Length: 426
Ligand SMILES: Cc1cc2nc3c(=O)[nH]c(=O)nc-3n(C[C@H](O)[C@H](O)[C@H](O)COP(=O)(O)OP(=O)(O)OC[C@H]3O[C@@H](n4cnc5c(N)ncnc54)[C@H](O)[C@@H]3O)c2cc1C
Image (cartoon, rainbow, N blue to C red):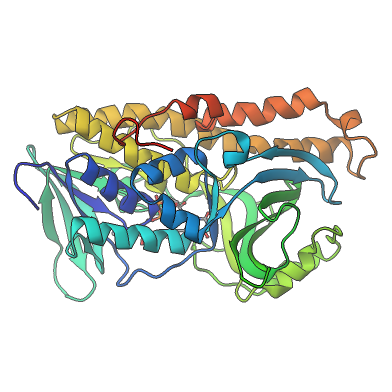
């Protein structure tokens, strides 16, 4: 690390931690990223990046890379369980944003960020195989106590001006500060995720959701092949109820599709064959729908939480990765503008904690997907005229309300400036 510049230790090389390293570098802060896995691999399936987070990645100079590896989402549409359309809205550039919305493979995005951090911050900037055990406040500095996978022995301190814990939903730092919080909260729903090579559907760049809270299917393309086929990311969801998930949350848990495929056997809509999508995936992963209650405090003087460590939320409204990216920029702006580190971290928390708490709460009320449940409740056997079931105004209000809460209202977002030099946006 260079002298004179503030030094940060970031725990976790996920989407949040890696983006934070890039944003901090822009803000004049040196960062080292500590990651527990021995080697990063492109894990996960598809995620969505909403325009507000794409603005930040564009400011970081990644727009061209993203464009080459992601699909520019053009439309989001909700259907009932019979494949009848309830609502659709344009997305990204098609909706008047200055930045696209991307559907992308999580692992591919993580690898792009990983390579970029190594290029810009140096080959020593990411230390894999190293685990955070605890954070210590040293007064004028902070220490992350780190143990190594390859070397036996006690944890060693990594001392810096600040520590950022971006260590995900099972955050060690969060457990240190909130030792009685316990496991993530289960919503009573199980998610099964996979990717399947399939023929394009609808616009070829549509994200769709069908069903209702009890049983739902979401899918969207995350890549296009030269032969006209695309890689479709899908999530099948089923309410099972109960206070505890049947198995602990693990992003990489593989599962036999026969445990849920029969539930979707009849979901052939003509324009989309859901049983075929489920059958065509090479691997299927299971994840329980979990989140955690919003916290009263993220920042403890020179240490703070970021991303899923701070605000794990239900995967509704495509916000998990996007909000981690927004945190990263907000942290960098606070450190750029406020030289006193504890004051800067407090400023970051003030900018982000209430905003993300509102999304956690809104996602518990199903966010914009509420329209699907309303239609299921009012017309469980399907409908002839949609507007006899739900009015256009009701549909529009629900969609607009969520955009305001999640910070991607088009007019407000298009006025935003972040870390980019003035006039450098699209
Ligand atoms: C392997 C994996 C696969 C995922 N797949 C999907 C998916 O398919 N769809 C989806 O919507 N979301 C997925 N997610 C979650 C999604 O990436 C996050 O919700 C979102 O991007 C916010 O990212 P984050 O950086 O806050 O957390 P994460 O992406 O969870 O990253 C946290 C990082 O911290 C590391 N870490 C944890 N504990 C420690 C420790 N003690 N010391 C050092 N490092 C530590 C983890 O290994 C991880 O790399 C996945 C996460 C992971 C880790």
